[in-house]
Length: 331
Image (cartoon, rainbow, N blue to C red):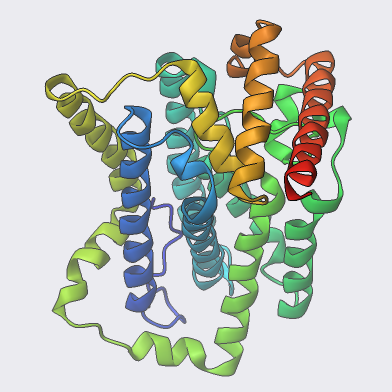
């Protein structure tokens, strides 16, 4: 993504840190692998929900955290001593413009999960807000980063449930989007990068990093890193198009909504409960939703308070029913 803020040399600064380019290039390759797997899931070649749970979910969060950490790190390297406004606004406009284009395109192509605030939106906003932390002590910046990361765990507000406020990340609901990277908690990763860059600059680590000279094998990674915004905008349409072409020749097996629901429910449930309980729980949920003819309502991502309260009641009922069955089975 030039999703990076430049790490290039300017008068009075150290030379560009190639190691940062290499790390960003590795993160980009990891991101592309995740998106390719998501594409396979979208076209039905993997189990539904594969990339949303378990190790794949952790993998995705590590990739996003790495990119945002590097945004903060590079922001300090480029503007820590003095904010170079011309360069900053030029890159801000590029990232913000690309983010807007992604929102428009996905709104047209995938209205049910369009990207209203994805990683490019977060990078643009976080870069702007990050300027306020460039002069603050590293420890204070790191403390604020921890608070930003922890806040969504403990604070949620129904007043922020309006779609125009979802970008904050503190709403009581979880909006549906194919790429949702709100201010909370992800701005914390950017602040962590700023704090780390400050520490690296004062401790001499930055100078040692600048002296590192990776071998020629790293050249492709460096090239990708230095043209990352272009690669970011192009790679997913290319991967998606390739999988689509393959699906025209060898289409995946089409499964019913009921089978898809059971697979997704089982995968989600097994993140915290055993498989036997989850099988009973998911069957209970499916049977109840079908009995109410409300399975479509679930798939349409109904966010009305009445439906959310009803769904919460169904979860509680099926949890209790399945727990009793498990206890009776033990006896």
